[in-house]
Image (tube, rainbow, N blue to C red; front, side, top):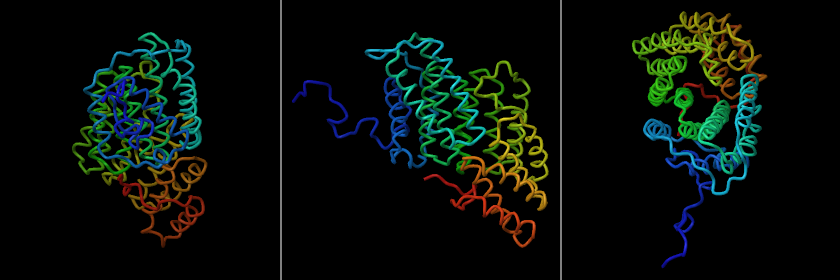
Length: 397
């Protein structure tokens, strides 16, 4: 019997897109579905819906999204049935300025400080542009790219708060928006971020695959700095997997790519990737491979940072502390740990706290030493109560 209209999801027992528990995990091939999905994600996040906020990391969702990114062409950008607002170049410029402001706050104070405001902005200001805006094809591509940048940042902030399932959904939708913008470089940056998260939660094989997909996109985008970043992420995954020869090869390739990069053609969202950042990633690789001496050399170089990256400095100081600890230089390890504590207690960053807690656990075998006992006591007082597992033991469901 005919319903007299098109059959919809409710007719066959499915909930609307905004009510699905896997909201945001799918890389939709359709342009309109993408807008419906990403705006529903922002709305449910803003409303603190538990199925979104408390979601767990979904194994396989990144792999599927990466494949679709590499194989799905961007769909022709259409317009809403009844567009109500003209979108112009100044709208995009203002949007990107706001994103840069949020990015600075994230680096200064950690993901927890500004993330609610970012989600509000996405829902209140960006969603209407996507859902009801009128724009030309070039402006539409710029709009989708700008939306991808801020959606990526919201996901990165969630990752910094160790809300891994939520971060995953945002990064997948950021990747989808980048595909609609036909922006290979931005897509490569988002894939590199996915790889970063995968290494953190102990999925080195997935991290390697994502970093390779990021490199493919970086080559298509033509940005040597992004090629270097994707190769660095490959090296990190290989170091975690204890493959020193392959790691070294990737590090050499990353260095060569970085030497070809120039600041004048590096996108604003990649300007954090400088010599200090490179040194830090090299240091992490050598730390994972157990070479405390080389890890120390690169960790020291990583501290030659530009201002504004407080969280990054805390990470790099913890790296240096770990390098000293690997060499059993307890005085220096504890001194660096104390510096990291001082920075970390001013940040709203779960990753920073976990890195410091991981350092503390690594020191526990030397807890009878007075200098270590003092640091452990200081850390116990300053660190918030949280999951005591070290970073290396975090696993996704």
